[in-house]
Length: 429
Ligand code: SDX
Image 1 (cartoon, rainbow, N blue to C red):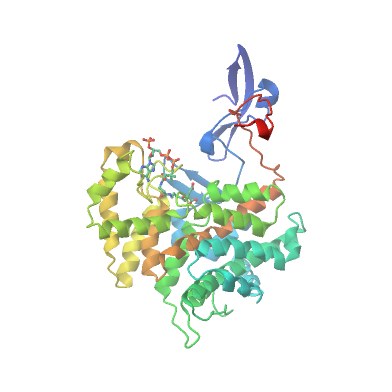
Image 2: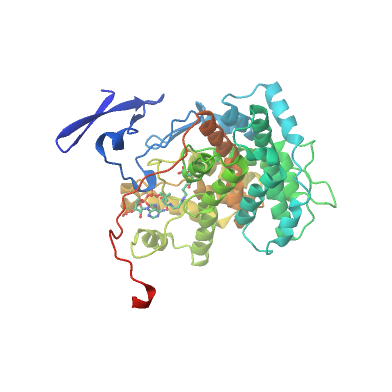
């Protein structure tokens, strides 16, 4: 196949290079398009537009394939820990035992947040959404670590900035959660590994030491691994866009948290449980809700279904669905919404509306059921998505800087008024 694309405009043929990715994807490099033709492209939602070359994550939406740095998501979810996968995404290779021990030890030295940061928590209304708090607390890290403000600092300073974010994020999440309950904060303890430390800060009590259930630790590792990165999704693209102005890592990730919060993106895991509860309260008539999702005049959408890229099963959804059954059985939990979810999935996958549009369950369809079984409240689900996605955001931000990519600044086609005469306010109607 030719590595040149031809575009004919006004009878003239222009040639543009075609580049091929390491997995065989093809792209037309249009970086000279406007200079040569005076034209730009228009692609709402960037459905056909690549913003970068990346070596972090590969996904094939048609085949339902997802790989981090060349390793399949199935193998990583089964055989790795979240901290190993975080190291893989950020530094490019799976760590040796020494490397992951050193990584854990570096992180353990930075898990505390400045005591003054707790004052921010006192200022939020008690029922305020944890994603709003998370975004502002993460951004405020840049006020306590001025060395992090220089996005082009030395590799050592940048590495410490990344380590601090990985280390403090679980502490911030757990402090937000404990504050929402009115419970005393539980501080990080260096004797725990990354995920166990987080679970202890979330479920621990000042009055007694708790047993961290290995089933819960394993489930949490799997869920965080499955959420760790997903190439140029809305929030990762936001982190890259904000970071492209040389804005610091903390503020860039804070912007990514805001993008993830939307119910069309990471906020879907909360919206799925709310939808399933609504269907349960309504008597569990899945047929009725499938028809509502198909009705163009009804704003209802089947949350947790459909995906911009996956036009096949989201491989993460398959793993989570299986984990759902395993974990609920191990924890002896019978959650009625799981049966509703399975009925919905079965009905949708045999309905022409969903089949024709290649709408399958995505990562958010079953994840909330596990989070709930692990004891998390619904409004913390997207925060847990952010905790998983953090190493991916860091890796994407780091790669964008290492590649010295230009500041992001898309073009537009103007469709507004052309020349209008100014009328002084006295003469306006
Ligand atoms: C995540 O990008 C990523 O990688 C994201 C993510 C990650 O890891 O970062 O994978 C995480 O965000 C997963 C997606 C979570 N969102 C939801 O579950 C919300 C429900 N899903 C949708 O709103 C929708 O499917 C999107 C937003 C996910 C994708 O939308 P697209 O690609 O813009 O597709 P579209 O809106 O153009 O839909 C195409 C058609 C439309 O119908 P027609 O106009 O062709 O008649 O499918 C319909 C849509 O109305 N459709 C749905 C639907 N999703 C799409 N109809 C009913 N229910 C749905 N969920």
